[in-house]
Length: 165
Image (cartoon, rainbow, N blue to C red):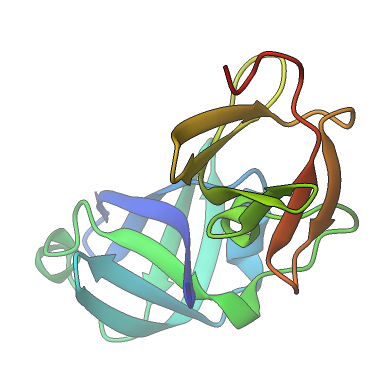
């Protein structure tokens, strides 16, 4: 995955072509540091240089080069706002969900499958792993997840009793 989803264009803001964006990140201030964004709908994507970004309540107002009117901005309603993976700020600890998806999950030497999705629940996250024997929902707990090797694309787990039954 070379592009990372960080927001969705809701609608134009004002008459000058600014975009009102709903941030899909726990750090909306990241928009203030961006130099470029990728607007994407399906397989279509367009790169834009960021002129200015500002926060307004829970939204981000984004001004990009070449978008000079509300009519032009309207064309991007509902488009995803993405950034290049190389522009993702490193975390002080842990990892991003998108770094886990696609990872091979093992219990000892047994390949359980590929981590396909991370579900956020109230108590703890759940890793959905698809393998030859179907789908497993593995709780993201320190007692279960023993090792995460992001560069090696491998996760080692010890499943709780009865989870595979």
